[in-house]
Length: 255
Ligand SMILES: NC(=O)c1ccc[n+]([C@@H]2O[C@H](COP(=O)([O-])OP(=O)(O)OC[C@H]3O[C@@H](n4cnc5c(N)ncnc54)[C@H](OP(=O)(O)O)[C@@H]3O)[C@@H](O)[C@H]2O)c1
Image (cartoon, rainbow, N blue to C red; front, side, top):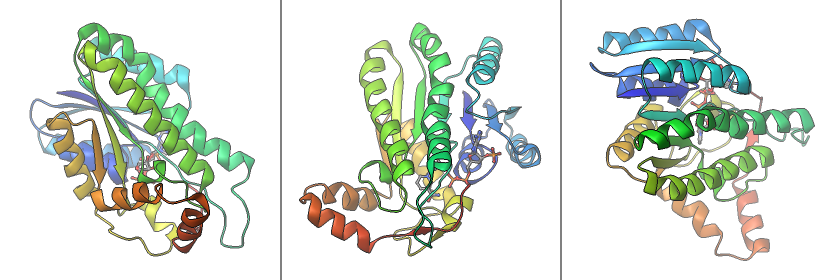
């Protein structure tokens, strides 16, 4: 198995790399933090995998395409995982996300994922094999009041994945849309609020790996968090808005 993961330097991306690391597996790891990426690569190598690293910003479409195609020339990818993500949020003092932070969230979470997938699509389809995994969020199912741009980015990514799966299925390429609830990571540490049904990053990674192995089109982890947020959509807008305000969380910082 030859795979590429964005945002592999920590959190879920690192947990996924370690989860899949094994003899016969080649991992191409993308991130910006050189020492953190090197540490993840060393862990994966200790588990018998071979690794390739690139220090790239997923917003840099040109550099991403050049690196991905060079890697794919040398060893064609069978698994492509768009995981890199950032948050912004309305501030505890009541401030809004602001135009710059909102644009950055969309650029990394949505355009950044497309910058990974789009250059490889013709090759995957041409080979008639492979799988694309998109790490969205349960925030894709229902906008939450403290992070409108983040929710928009994840809803967009979810929609992209649903479309791709229908498009690529007959061409032999699978798509797994992933919607995690809260899990332990640097990102979730910045939310100042209760985080119901919280999992470890390793537990989410194990569920994603299982979904990929079974060829599932969707992976919601934990499922009950998905049921709650999807179930809310059955209510009228005034009622659901009132309810999600109760779950309101504060994003204490951006990153
Ligand atoms: N944590 C949660 O509760 C939660 C819940 C639902 C969904 N998610 C989603 O799960 C994914 C992973 O989140 P996490 O909690 O593991 O986050 P994290 O610990 O903050 O890690 C984010 C990763 O994304 C990378 N990244 C950020 N901006 C980047 C950029 N411009 N270019 C390249 N890489 C970039 C970071 O690497 P560098 O710093 O090295 O660039 C890092 O490896 C995200 O898409 C997130 O939205 C998280």
